[in-house]
Image (cartoon, rainbow over all chains, first blue to last red; front, side):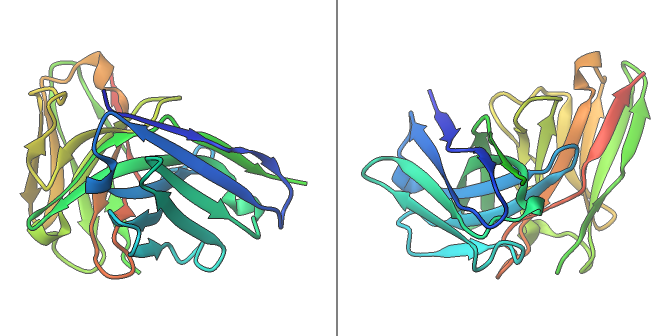
Length: 121
Length: 111
């Protein structure tokens, strides 16, 4: 059974840091791109970041570039999101999702249950 | 920066048919945008429904179908059930620095 389980969310003050984790199981982790998506309370989904299968390619939304770092540990089947210089507007539920990319398809399928990050003083 | 636009809300009667659309600010949506569709119910994580325009996941009910329609990606629900009431999001691959852009979502009411 495919499972993605996020952890690491919580309450942090503006300017603070958090590291989110996404533990993957039930599939071959190294064959998937992994993405982070966030959703502010009552708002829509927003793409945050992605990393390729071996961690050599990363991309970020402009809103988090320079502050967030995505990484993965394929030996531990775990995806990470290091979030620094957090702002109130980073408050959201953060989801990890797996994506299979092929020559003529981009297949998003499984998502984690999400972890809530609250940035507030 | 590409903006992806969906209808903010739609209402459909049980048993009816409704089409949700997904437009790109840069022009017509084509196969190269690899549209994906997701359903989200309150308090739940998104659930994938459709990938690369028309392809269903093993768990996607047969009443859901994807297509390209008039330069947009489209999600059609035929024979709508009360449990289909949810928010629906499309995702377009816009390439380069914006590999994924979500639409603002459509709130579907079954009434």
